[in-house]
Image: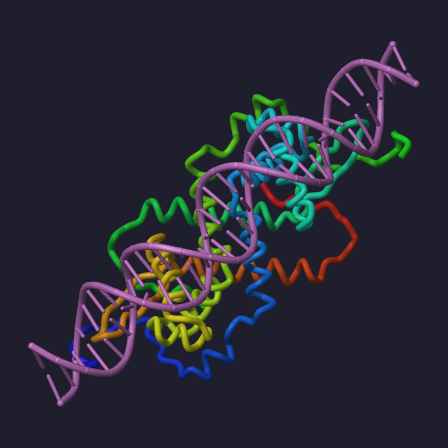
Length: 133
Length: 133
DNA sequence: GCCATAATACACTATTACATGGAATAATGT
DNA sequence: ACATTATTCCATGTAATAGTGTATTATGGC
């Protein structure tokens, strides 16, 4: 490791292992985060959530027609979403209407979409701006 | 389960299928979102990103020691993160230092963590507050 | 050039996830 | 009660994923 004159990035903080370890995300939180993102990491569920956020509530049949998929496929994902308390249900006769429970989900989706757009508009100038902190 | 007097949720918007279809997320965006969330939906990658956001930059060896995992496992996930342009590299001698490129990633992580915390503090009073929009 | 270390590439395995088809359950109308 | 429709349950095949072990590449010290 010689040292050399490569310009070190301005972002380098050089913390000790102990300092880093002390701040490390704990198992519970990282597992929770993984679970949350897993729920969102599926095109079918994303489209379901997006449709629900637009229409307010929809039943399985509506969704399968709208997204052009089988009823079972939609139901599968709705079960998963309901299991994670992302959506809730209301029964009306033979129909079961699903709706988004936590508005934060919609917000997170919008923010992620926004991030995607900006990364497309990606300027290659690598100005190393601090995030914030 | 007699039909009837269940109070319908106030969130019902009742849009027609055409109206919904017109606003539906397009394939490209939903696929992009899925990809972004897939990247985040892994405990190892989350811990890597968190460690990087704390320390600024780390090499594979640092990370494998900090997270107590094999070098290959860390490298695997770093390749995936680099492939998605989430992290970038800098070589210094034999070491290759990784850093987070887009500060929005850290922000998204924080926001998701915040959401998790609030859903733990979950008040069961189901006040249906509109997200926004 | 030779060796040690850091990082990666490759092949392999175990696990998970998703859509599908068919059957079962629930609610409604006749 | 029976048929019909909406939804869910279950078993299956397929694909993707993550970690491991081994081999390979790259850099620097000797």
